[in-house]
Every structure is written in structure tokens, then in C-alpha cells.
Image (tube, rainbow, N blue to C red; front, side, top):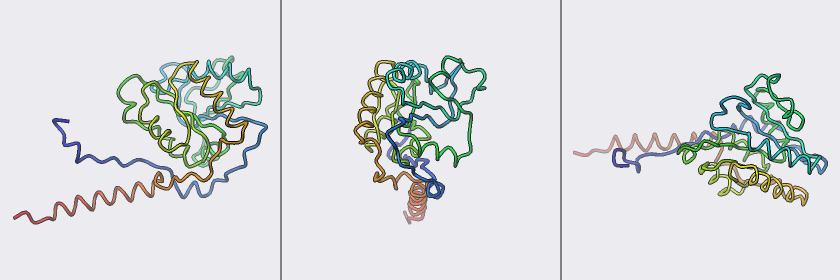
Length: 223
């Protein structure tokens, strides 16, 4: 803060693709299947980076044993599918990367969308999951996971699009049970959520305004 003038710093978020989302069918969500999806790049084995799904997998196994109508899928897995532990495949479906439009359709079909930021460093104060904006645009419920994922936690709770929990088996299982209860009561999906400000078009407009403001400042006559 001493070195940089933080009041001169502005953040412009990535946002979702409004035009592409306009082509995506938003399906009706039925009571027969409870679909939990992670859509985005992730590694299941080896060094997981800042998206470590191991605690979730442990909780997911217990949750699916109690709720057999649950479908859990990870789409965008960077591992070779043949290398994933067969025991995990008994209760989680894994797919590699799919085209963007297909990924958005999968996002739209889920009841619950997962976000991970599990790094225990200060990055969680600043990084918002890249898929957060697509998750919000879908109208579906979001479960954000991470001990110090402050940025994810803030946007999920501030917008009311879901809940956040710490990255441990007990906390994740408790969150899943709370979400399941909302699903059973028919209170999970919110198609009326106002997400216009999180579109890429809107964010680009904000960026343009910043550039114009900077240009105006440069043109001020200080003589």
C-alpha cells in the first residue's frame, strides 16, 4: 500500500458471454435426479494446484450413499480418464474438456455447481473462480469450497446464488445436506437472478469508461 496508490487501482472482471448464453436452453429441473456438477479445468490426481477435490470426493461418497438419486460429474478433467481411481468412478462421472457451448449446457442442466479455491495462501483474497460468472448466469445453485477462498465466498454470498463452506469432509457434507433439503423443497433454482452486471459486455463497458476517464485526466490543462 505504501508503494502503490491503491485508490488508482480498478478491477474489471472477466464475466460471462452474454451472446453465447442466449443460445443455451435452460431446462426444467425435475425431482428425479439431483445433479451436482463441476465444470472447468481440474486435476484429480497428482498436484491439484488450487483446486483440490479430495475432501469433496470423500464427502460425496457418503452423500451419494445416503441419496441414491444424486448424480455427481466433473467435466474438464485434465487427467487421462483411464488413470483415475476406479473407486472414484463408482460414484462420480468424469469427462475431459468439452466445447464451450457444451460446457454451458452442462452448467445449465446441473442443480448444484461447484467452485473450488483450496490454496492456503493469500490468493484466495483476490481470485474469483473463472466459472463463477457462468454459474451465476445459469440460475442454478452454487457451492463454493475453500478455507481461505474469501473472494469466492464474498461473491457467492453477496449475490445470494449459493453458499460457501470450508474444505473439509464434515463441512462439505453438511453443506450438501442443506442444499439437498432446499432441492427437495423446490427452493433451489432462481431463474430471476439479476446477473447483467456480470456479463462480459457490461464489464467491457466499465473498462471503456475507465480508459475514457484516464484519457480525460491526461487532457486536463494543468498550466
